[in-house]
Amino acid sequence: MQIAPSGYRRHAARKRNPDLRCARARRDETLILDVQRVWKENMSVYGADKVWKQMNRENIPVARCTVERLMKRLGLEGVRRGRKLRTTIPDPAIPCPLDHVNRKFRADRPNQLWVSDFTYVSTWQGWLYVAFVIDVFARRIVGWRVSQSMQTDFVLDALEQALYARQPAGQKLIHHSDRGSQYLSIRYTDRLTKAGIEPSVGSKGDSYDNALAETINGLYKTELIHPRSSWKTRESVEIATLQWVHWFNHQRLLEPIGYIPPAEAEAQYWRLTATQVSNDVLL
Image (tube, rainbow, N blue to C red; front, side, top):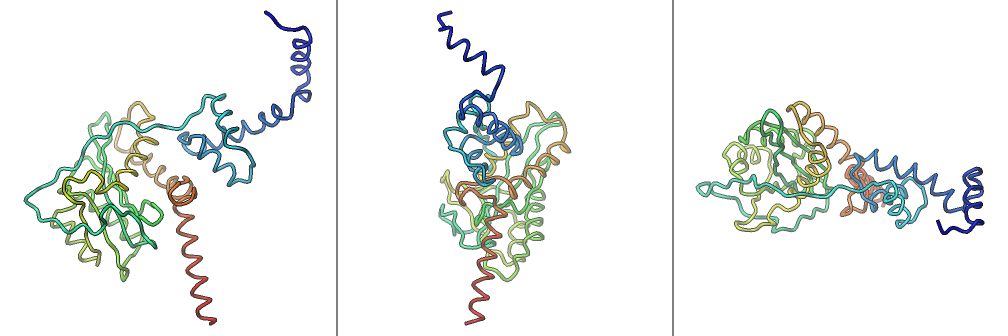
């Protein structure tokens, strides 16, 4: 090996006494522990961007390029999305509500716009279907359900969970979905009407008519379902989904809302609203 004797002696001295290493090497040993911890605490799905953001949220000053370099050194990487399977089965015989969203998935407050959709999971016991209801304001999952069939009951159960958790009575709320027959069924639309929620359905032939809900479905499949080679039972999927939803709502950093968790974004909104009300009362 073409190595200078001085270089070898310097390397050997550093092996005997790690304090002789340069400042960057010593700091890397400390940062590696934090990088590994943040990556593992977030279901091992974060890439360099979100690991870097989370470390800064924890007041660990580090450059993004350093996080990327250390993750590459450790062999850590974020998950990547795969192919999607179409689950929407429209029924042309059922009349559709108007599209009140027009692909503008924005809300100024919680309980202003909900979007719903469902996806599939393959298990040893057959196909399962997982429905989500998402509050657009902070992308928070407010209702979900796992089922062995694609009947109306299971998407209705997800809606009932959202209604119970959010109590949106008295607020102007729009519920948006694709043209799937489950969401256009009489039972589903009647429940929306009873709850005082205005239904909205994506336009025909528009691949982005329910893009936000499909994005959440994609994250669920990429971060939870695909990393495991197989799922044995419905119970295992339900437990894992429960854990993922809690992590998603309370810990996962979301870029569209400023790299903070959905629950934190909603808490900030309510604090700001309470402060404004107090100021108005004082005035």
